[in-house]
Length: 163
Image (cartoon, rainbow, N blue to C red; front, top):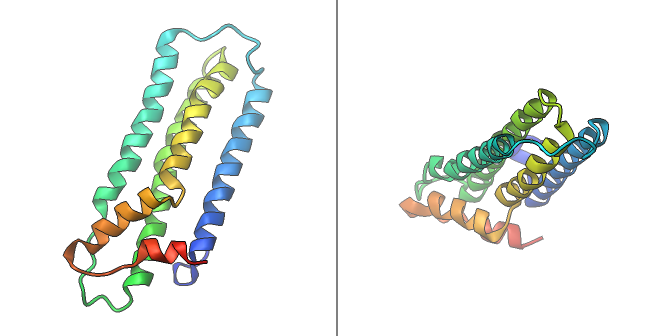
């Protein structure tokens, strides 16, 4: 990721695209290397455990919104400060979501049904990762609402709408 002082909305989108693509590629390669779905389906407890781990990553990523300190109206460059905070939130969300996926990958390696577990955890894991990190109106407006809670005008959502 570039220095936060130089980060633009387009660079954030490119960073998220790259991370999503690399994660998907990693999971596809692991799925192929570990035999795909050639083995028996894993027991229900393994499926539930994998999905619970992904859900835990999603919950932790969602809680990242609550860790934003509102900007004060006298903040020198509220737009830049808001963008920097959004970048750090995005990286934090990647850590939570990809960490959950990595735990599922480790569980898959410990199992004789690895391909299935990669598939079972990978598809919802990638969906959660994309939902939590892509700069959608939802994600941007949640951050902007938290940042503007003390009267500052960050303009985060508007900054992403203009090219």
